[in-house]
Length: 333
Image (tube, rainbow, N blue to C red):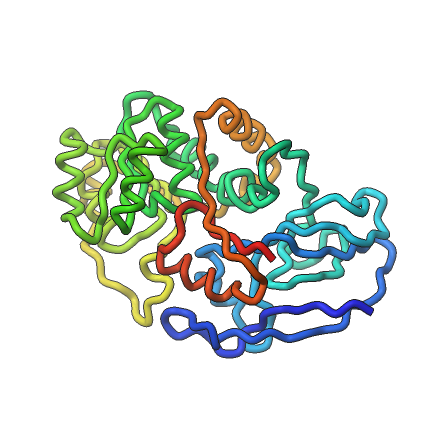
């Protein structure tokens, strides 16, 4: 029988996760039954939601997450040996799984389409969940128009960097907020953002007034907290806000206080909507086809921060939460 390695939660997180909050365990894998496949992980995704979904964190449970895995054994004709799948298998290097939908909220494995010369890891990034998040969260919720001003927080991350580029493709003026001068340089010089600034070294509200003196039409919020309150205070009448996440609070041990935004919401008749990207699951393929074409045309660029080695997954996760990544953070198993 094959043995799998998996990272389990050794201690519940208190504030920022630590390497010794995880431990590696081994388990024997069962023989395949009809309708099952044996997958071998090639890339594991580390994402902010993995820290936020604390209701799924239990001591002894496998750490949650998605991966691109190669099918090495199959008893399902629709999932042949040698193909790759994206599946929510957690931090594991081998897994036996059923291909049929289950009663819980775990999605069935999705076969990775032929990506041509593009790396397989993109199925966890621009051509995966983060890319769909950027595409639908911006276009469906905010419906940006040519000439409008779009602000993105967490702009150098897996989602934010794609949001800003899609906004540029749609003819918008794009302003990115990031956490380092290196990220600001990348956003402006490589991704074509019209403006970008480091929130750690500037006054966000003042910088926004200089970059967008007539106000902001669309805000894609990955961060929350005081940074987002400053953006909302500078929005135009009937501006739209897409709330993707709140990474500024994920490691907090107490709820952060932020300036009141309700008067801006009322006075400017703003629309604010949170979302989970599985709302559009049946349309993901459409989005990926369009974004793959943008990549081929040079309109959409991507960057990956790749950590080598399964055993280094916790370090990659912690570094991503600290904002050490440019673009999508993945682990090459």
